[in-house]
Each structure stands twice: as structure tokens, then as C-alpha cells.
Length: 97
Image 1 (cartoon, rainbow, N blue to C red):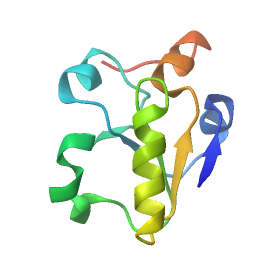
Image 2 (image 1 turned 60 degrees about the vertical axis):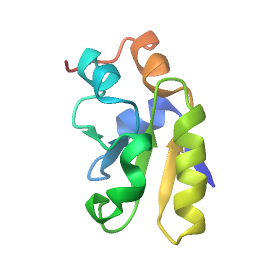
Image 3 (image 1 turned 30 degrees about the horizontal axis):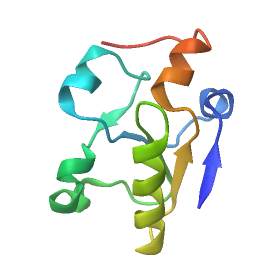
């Protein structure tokens, strides 16, 4: 499974970002442009995943790593964001809420 840092994420463009946190976590603050597909609902919402490569983020990187690993095993091009949204915020990058 591939992974990137939040600094690398910030430099990327044109790559969809899937946030697998629960809706209340997502609503509290997220990386701009992220789409919420909670890990708890992902099995029923696979059809909503983008075509081609995409990045996966959560709070600190644990859930997103498990999701990216499982999706990669199913043939998706999923890349984990190490450190998650917390690392993004700690780096001082902009947040949407």
C-alpha cells in the first residue's frame, strides 16, 4: 500500500480525497475538497468511490491505512495519508468546516 505525507497531499492536484471519518468528525473540520465516505458505511458505498487513483485520510492515519490496504487488495488505486487530518491541522494548512 502506498502512502504520502500531508505535505505531499497539499502539493497534489486533481486527485480525489476520501475522508473515512464519521460524519460528526468530518463536520468538525476537514481538508478542503475532501469527500466523506465513513469507514463504517464504505462497504455499502463502494460505487461512490472515484475512478482511478485517490487518496484516503482519517484523523491520524490508522483507519485510512486499513481502508487503503483493503481497497488496494480489491484493485483500487488507494493511497493513505500518513498522520491524517490531525497532521494537516498541526502543519497549519487550511481547514474547511
